[in-house]
Length: 279
Image (cartoon, rainbow, N blue to C red; front, side, top):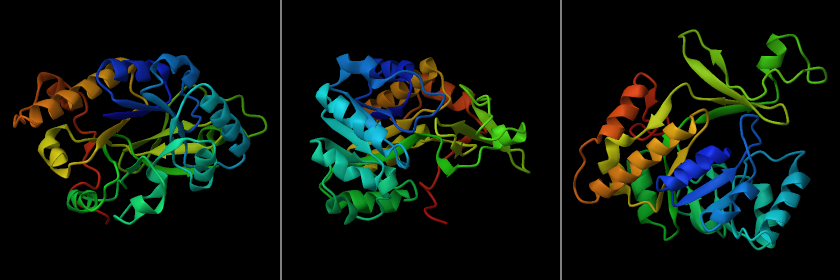
């Protein structure tokens, strides 16, 4: 089980409930709390995550990568192809994030890597075919909100009449929403560079389809947490861990924890592309 987060409380709760790996950091979202240095005691399981978008912050991330390597972190998740060589040259064992858009079995062997996050646009049959044709460790998305787009335009500050130069950080520490004509609410989380990260209104939850997930024979399942509180995040990790353990024994019934998660999120659940693929 892999967890991606930028919040210390979620990272600790995930580890407590059975996460094998936590990739910590990613986009410098304003809702994130804490630094990976606060997790040094877990560095055999916690690794830094360098995001897909790295522009003016390249030097910042390079300095961070050097510092964290000196602190003893040996592995990293990388989403940016331009930062990939930097990490390799520093001696990191690199996992490829979804920014590499791994869509076929040739991709995992194109780059030196410890494992690859498979594209969320692949359906179950396509995932199974790809996984069967590579010897690399594979990572499959099973929980979280999919990011739909990133924009340099900030609808939050603009709606209140602010520009980037005079904005009093009205987005600070908060999740905001864009509502479409159907009433769906798409989450917006801003980063320290005033970019808007817009996420799906629905949450991918595959707890009812553990049998299909196990049939993929992937190396890892990954859960991404955004606005969830730490307690709920821990419950999600525990539910997937328990479902996997029982599923490997042929028991695919829904536990009480799984039923509670599904009930709390009813009308907000999507299966993503698992059963339809790329439209």
